[in-house]
Image (cartoon, rainbow, N blue to C red; front, side):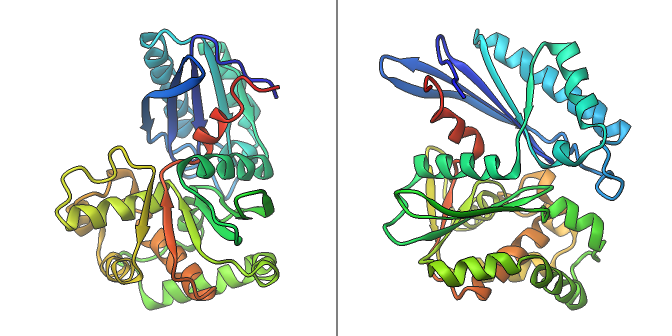
Length: 313
């Protein structure tokens, strides 16, 4: 795919939970991210079981795209690249949403496959931090799907997109608040059933660490930094190294808290209050399953991965 940078580009990542906007402009041979924002459109909410975008979510999604379009106009950017992922891939009325969005805004939306999503995530992560010579496991937890990529600093060795996004799992499991031991057990049994091909791949490639891509991992890092008294948090950073101790302590707090208590936790954005205990449980499960001790965050993900293709043939 040939993407043109010209006077700048706007990249819209239409996720299951959030619609993310990234604006980049070119200065000589370099690009700079000049603006980024996100809107919690919750496109998948209430529609996973029937594989539809509900009327309420449909309306929220269109409104979010229109809002992003206004921002893009303010930045005087002509080239817009919009990518849709899990919720729109699966929804029976996904094509209808794409058409309506184009009718109202003129923005063409490209619904990408899980494999394509994984490739872009790898490219984004590679921009944020240095992946080692030894294979590492990249984990991107979305609302509708979770992508796992095994890669080193040279190439992607294995990738797969699982229908294991935290919003999808939340609607399927309908967990209590706070999570019960039974909820956690059901979730882990479910993961064991669904991820056998990942277990085989990890055995084959002997991964050396875990890299969490943006999203829930970023929320955990922000909470840890806030609790430590950091003034700037992740501002200006593209990576963060977790300690197992701090992740374990925060996980313990999250699974024992209810929504009202989580709403008071510093560093946690409102639209993750409902699902962050499940996301933390998923991360904790992955760390334990593969006996991992090196855990890093990449604040870059799919949308930053698209930058790698700007101006390329």
